[in-house]
Length: 116
Image (tube, rainbow, N blue to C red):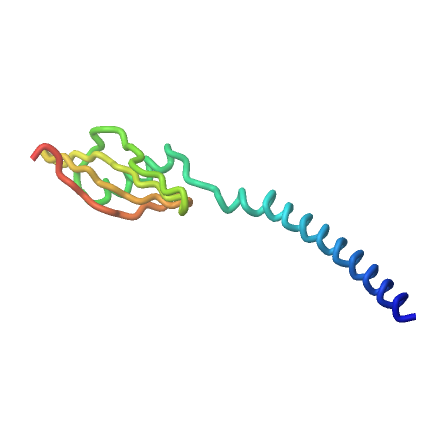
């Protein structure tokens, strides 16, 4: 009698665990298909250039962009981009470096003067 009960319980738990494992795999697959790509959205380069130039121009009263913006670094872990904007104000030329996040929000990093 004891052997039959143990066999029944063992058989029951093995079927239960296999069903649970298959549901877990299905749930994990759905997570990777639907959730992960949406969270990995990133700001496109053209939008990043525009955001960086607008942020750089906001620091000057009369300024223009004298050279196209460039992505200097792409941080793969966070999805942020470091973008260099080239600004001319009066007779001075500046390189303004901003950090652009996945939502295209610009944060000032540093400024340098050129040709001085």
